[in-house]
Image (cartoon, rainbow, N blue to C red; front, side, top):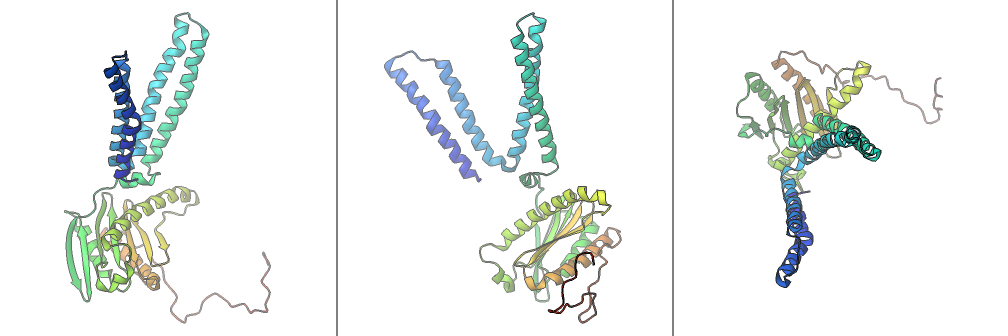
Length: 331
């Protein structure tokens, strides 16, 4: 929901709720009838508050769920205090039992609400809700320069100040970017995206863009990279019981190209993109070699030591004739 829609909510509230109250006050003033002015002011304050909340909600967007749960938790905490007073006050003051039962019920309801709010806040902090990732994302790289290598014009964007190791990693990423296969590479560190480089502005790639622009693609790739890293971290919690280690490679092989997520180290990962479906395997091999190069810049051993069978080499797959029966399970 965009900001314009939130602004419309405020207009609707003012039109259907605030306008009748103002008209009633105007009629009271003209006819000289008695009217509860304090109640009218209260209604006006509540309506204006709702309209203000509707306007502010359009500016906070991804943080809105966290704020709602926080407000629910604070309200539940106040309910616990009020419930305790209402529950044990009648006993201390020797009053009827109904007030005690009411107070104990309030304590139970408030305790359940408070525990639910705390639980949801913990989940939001761990990134369960995707807009939380967008709301907590650090600024993207802004320092821009271009470099021509062969027939490729490469765009490079970095954070203002990057370390010597990141400079080496950037050089490795630029060396593998190509208009033929690997079209986009971004490196993420503990502080967010440190840099990215691509050839999306190349004239030979224009046929891949119909309803989106290269700049829109870059923003989407960075967002998808954060979401894939979050998914990998969630999968790691389940894989620990199987002693499988960390998820080091995730590939989204889509209809047109592919998006790669490669784990580098704790808090560091690389994402890559190819727009050409025919080059998915080539780009994947490039990403595997690139990650090992980057790990070397951080004095880490390689982790993607994998090999593909040479063309024409023998394999363990045997052909089954059409007249041959399928083997039974367990045979």
